[in-house]
Image (cartoon, rainbow, N blue to C red; front, side):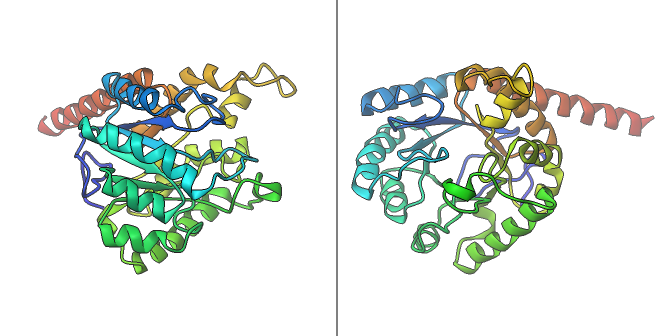
Length: 297
């Protein structure tokens, strides 16, 4: 992992001197977090530009909901949703990530100006994905994934969630490398909320240092997720607050992830997280300066 302020650099993307902020644009009618607010192409592009104005460094565009129980859209519909938005944002100079499990959508998005492929299955859902990414020379997010969030896959079973996620991610990264993707273009993601319950997610966040031992930049995608709802609930039996009321908690996770060395955080509400990662970077700078002063004595 090439170093950039200790958190890694992804070749093919801009270099940031702090944890980057990835804003989310869901071009779907059934997102768990924003329920179709940006389903129209023009609205989605406008929203993506607004996220950049609020501090997003890159924007992740997705046309298929991956919430538990979601029904997959067909290829033609996903292309119809995603490509115009990717093209519109890229034309405005935005660094665009495409959130897709389909190789065809990844290929056409890269042709339309996307700079990064963010596949929650890490290439497992579509065998053609890795060859497409490798041929394009694109950066690729490899997420920990145990299958579509249906039936028994909604909640995974772990003896040691950190060790198992690290080991399974390592195996997946090795497969991606064997498929021809360059090691300096791989990002890893622990897959918070995917086949994991709240306790699993919290333990993973407490041990991000173990994920960094994989040797690749780390993306943390905690925004508005169920485990934050459980943390914020008034009691064990109380209903969690709705997704849009979890943004302050998301910003707290962003600050923790940035402090731990994450390369980027993926969030729906950008402004608070943009502030959080900048504060984390300022503290890093103050610590480095303090250590230098101590060493000079």
